[in-house]
Image (cartoon, rainbow over all chains, first blue to last red; front, top):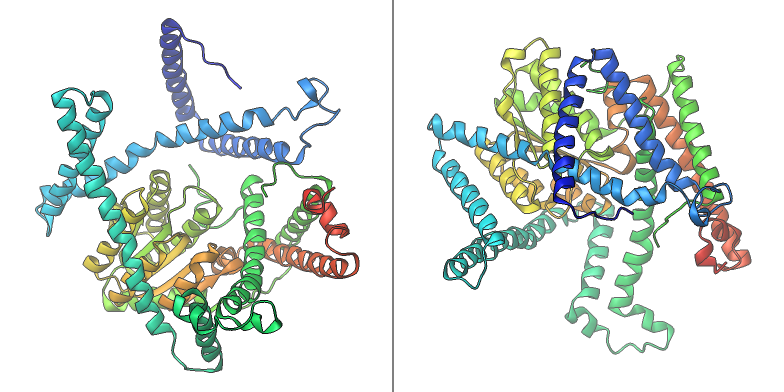
Length: 275
Length: 263
């Protein structure tokens, strides 16, 4: 929708205007009284939600939009840029996380709390990742120093971070076995049905189960009794209907909550606090 | 199939459902008494907080991996209730978060909870901490926190992904009573297996209404139930029409998804 204009002078003007504009806006907001702040938040929330409501519910093309080229929905071209803008504004908050982590771990080191060396390791890892991450972005791999920097970064990212991530993910397999061992007990009739269904689904997923029923012909009705077909039927018909029913409830609940937030009807907890 | 724009049928359905919800909110605000059935998981929250206080061990509350969206806001609402109980009984509430914006909101919410109970000096700001924005780094941090602090109760209310089982199992190993609620249907089985109480589906969005008994929220719940009844009628009607007319000629499918009906 927006075409970039290449101009260094214009870039500096834009940066300056943005800084002055934001400073002025923040100063203006700090001077507002509590009631005015609340009204501003309500108005901004309503207008923001109204944009997305109008964009979705107005048709893609209509003679009502006589002022736009091709009678297209006037709100749709702004959808992507607004999404990017909200992501960019949200990204400013990333420093909040870093500051919080630094305060917590810095306090551990300063007060020599139990396990303070782990906090020292956090700072070491944070600085190493920042330094080598930025350095490798701006250095050329063809130079001797650049080659070392890229190697170190690869060790930190692929060797450490990705490996640790995969290790955590692999814990799921063991935890799933432990949870299944605890859960699948024949305590009642319903539990028995659950165990039976779980057994049938599992047999339909593993080669041993499929081999056990492979002799059943696929072109006759008895082919429905093959392990993989039973598993598919249980997952796709029985389980799916329950899942969709839950999704309906969740969807309507989310609709109601979104409506309350949009129209400032949400109550309880922190929604009524004064600023 | 992604729905880019609504058609007339979607618009009418949405207007009907929103009108019903708003109407029930208005009648509730005017004093109409509404009944909400007992939800065991939510009733157990007070008991769980009391147990942790008796044992002298802290509690942990997680709002999941989401940013500022309806599921996370709902989780923060429940967290505020738990924080007020923690402040009242003089117990600690650890709140690890994975989003910086949620961190700011959670810090403010817990501070206000301790202030509302008249104990601002007892509030520990460092108990609300940012762990990581990365899924498994957050899970690893939270698991470590549960083990080191030996939490007696954990509350998992929010949108979770694959790390849900890791967190629930870690809480099990720490010997904590666990209450979980999530709108993520794919994670419900893991919570049911590993947690003592699980809130599923629309019970999750009923949590704040149940805990606060606020008329607006109760009225909204009634509106939600009526809307679900309308959707159920549409499902039954659609099923009957499919049997009579077949899928392609089904009137409802032609109204809801013309692309699927080929027209």
